Image (tube, rainbow, N blue to C red; front, side):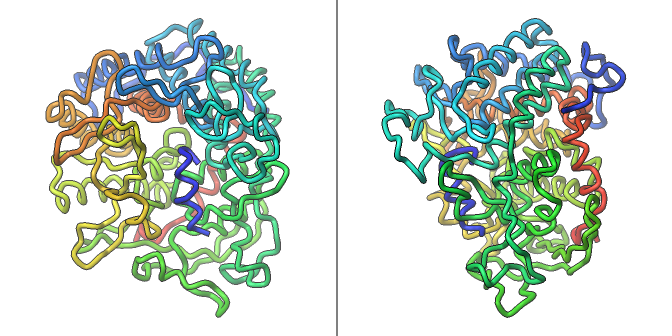
Length: 518
């Protein structure tokens, strides 16, 4: 997963064409997107310039791999992951699009990183969980001095683990690069051509039920959360479609290494029973979702699938929404930075993206009484250097209405106690004015959360005002990508959407009309 602790969270649920019209060339000026004024655009561009300064110190000068984190103080998280590498490629591309760096600098950076990646230990073309950025060796855990070479018999730990979602982000970085920079197309394509996402797909026999009871109640047709080299698939599935693992499904289908079954067999909300042998999902703590069963034909195979189009309603309102696993913002909106879900799926996942922002704003400001909003997995708002799975979970409702999928109050001691700036930037795509005002409130109310030499730190505690003086390459890259999309008319999305891999998502998003649209 994106962070090593995310594996525990999710385990509870069971060659590209060049862009037309010169998009891959020098970025052209574009009209301001609706909802942002010229002054706001200039302010956001200044933030992008400040944020980019983080990357000047984050990348190892010898291996050209991005460090996971910097801070507090002189602390440097000298390790990296597939997700870090993929989203770092987003960030460099965005810095070029925003004219913060020139084309020569951007291509030099990306080429150096990709040349190093080509020499990293990989399997099935996929990256392992953690690498030391100084030695480029696979390591079992962040910050350790031990390498996986010291434990050659490791079978089911990070030394052999390939994360589906992390490698999904890695793949998107390669896809963006080969469309943004034709001069790097061959390098990126060689790495893309080596990817094998089929190892993540559960291709065992499906049934008309939610699960196949004859094989240990496994939800066949879904995606495994990972793969252990030499052993096989990890023993859990990514069952919640509206969370960050869906990026690996987009890529897997785009590569034609996963059938469309993975999209329809994965759940929007946990479904009601179809068969007596289906599992009881009452453990998750949420009430029965509203919705209906519908039959959808797969756009590629033509096979019919019975899909539970479920949703929940925010208590006391008619605001319908899809919960993410854990209730965090990036679980919902990170994929949107490359996949144009709001354009391609206005009555499906695009609508779900908009509703996520509405729920986040309403809950944080009205139920929790925070002056700012945006709860998402991030560093802790202190200088311990810890990381936690923050998310909007509904703990402030007196009768226990959950807003997240899964029993996530157990995921963190205080799962709603931090606000992270990257959540606001992700929301610029769907709620530009509200997101911009929240970003400005973070600067005004917590002035220590922002510096000119790196932009926002990763998290603040809105009740105490404490600030964790730490920055993560993942989160800073999300900020850069969000600013590129907000200020350049969805430029990063355009790079991904123009690729044959990206195009496969379009009919899937277009065909679905979710129950929350009624």
